Length: 362
Image (cartoon, rainbow, N blue to C red; front, side, top):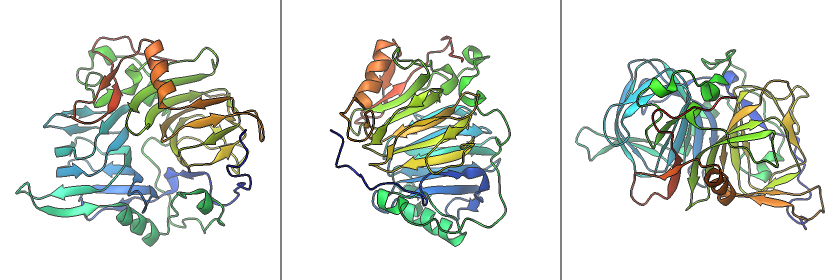
């Protein structure tokens, strides 16, 4: 039975999403030309989630990811000129780098914005390739948000129960994709087969080239499986959510960025939340139903950090548990290749779309 988890959990405070279009850009002294919209920062794990903006012409060098990171390019274009992750990243490109990956250079070919989930700090190495000139941590992100009056998304169930602090009062600074059909980031297929370098790199994948996977028992739900970690159980997805997700517990945390449509959410407005809204579900959160509240396809990114447990309502038996194993099995059963990370010791399986493959559309 599903009793005993969090029967008193009924938050009406600061649970829910943050509209990234209303968060200011905050410059980072560690990286001239780079600014962020802070979303979440954990002092327990060191993880932080931000929207990053790189001004055209910005060149960052000597980056070392002390924790893994994943990203989705929302607008613009940037290039990794060197090393095992060399390639040009354009809108709709999803990327992943394991902990301890060293990036020689990143060059912003245009003004570029991307969603970044960093599982640990970023170290900036000096020209001698040995000394550390600066470091960006979750504490830095938290301090930057506090100094600008930005409320970060809560990390725990207990924090979700607290009263909502005053909202940010400064001017809104929308994303570059605000007001556009951002669904195109992950669904348009035109020209992909001819776009050399965008769909063939195991650590950078054009999400438009990844097929939608559909469980016959859930025909209104489509998934693009981007990463499955056999070590941590973390799964990265693009979700097309046109049905209703029934009662469920988040036994592990999860985060989302809405790209298209509107999602109905507990304690949210009747019209739901639209593109540019980012959510974090703390471990143990429960929802009786989650569904789209518009006629447009509801599409969002998802990082799932642990299993989802489904039932038919409070005090009913467990109906199903969805974990990394089910996502991997769905990809395998659908004939969609997941390939091993090219970094030694990294247990990630990554989406693969060979050059010339047929891209998936709606």
